[in-house]
Image 1: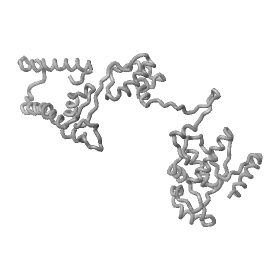
Image 2: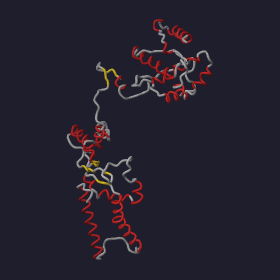
Image 3: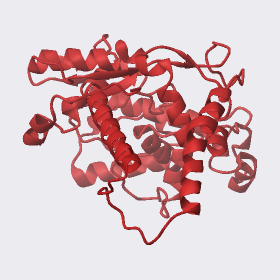
Image 4: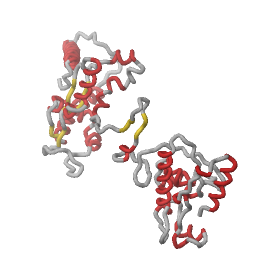
Length: 355
């Protein structure tokens, strides 16, 4: 199987003046071993093997699959890279092994390898030269890119200090990156310094009580460590919504009504008012009840809509808008409006949402 490649190697050796001692023969560069189809026509093998993708799994009796070729050629590639670092290496092989070595160099799956192969009109033609874009990648046994352990632990880099860089065993809590949000969202300190200073600390943040050990905690720790102060001045904490029976809401148990059905049936305002009037705004649990939303819709939203309908029915289009009426009832309505506005502003300044 190496007659043609040996002839090619000799021609290149003579042209480039390469020492014969630098030419290495390795059985892993051989063409596909077709087993029972050795000596048969190419068409017979292709009829059995099927598509390019099917060749990864369709194994002829006593022969190889594309997986086998990819493993042996990429194994050789990694060995050569390790042994001859920073050297120019020329592999002389056949079309299929060349294709699968390049696929292995990229950590490609069979599907990706086929796209790489079939999307190239020239394939790896006889006499062609291809540059392999390759750096060692964390990979599984099939030389497919896999960033998980234990494969990532095998990747090491040379450090300018003369040492070796590798993955450390410690892992940050995933909330650390969320806790970095107050400054990371502005890419501070690398840019947007004024924008960061104008928005830090935040007036308030709002999340569920489960974030006491999550976002609330990690953002406080990160900002206290980096800037010596809290990243927020106030915290609004909501409790957890449970099913009407007090259990955790579960798709499996189907112990809660569909949200869109609630919105379509009672309106978003009814749901919003119901939630704001529940203990959940004080960080306590609430048991969600559709009857509660129905009651709010009838007693609050429905009444407001009835008032609007009544006004529309007797609306006098000749009267211009204004608040200069001396009618005692009008003055009382305006006074109550101002009183309500003042109470709402006072409550919002204290972050009391249920007032």
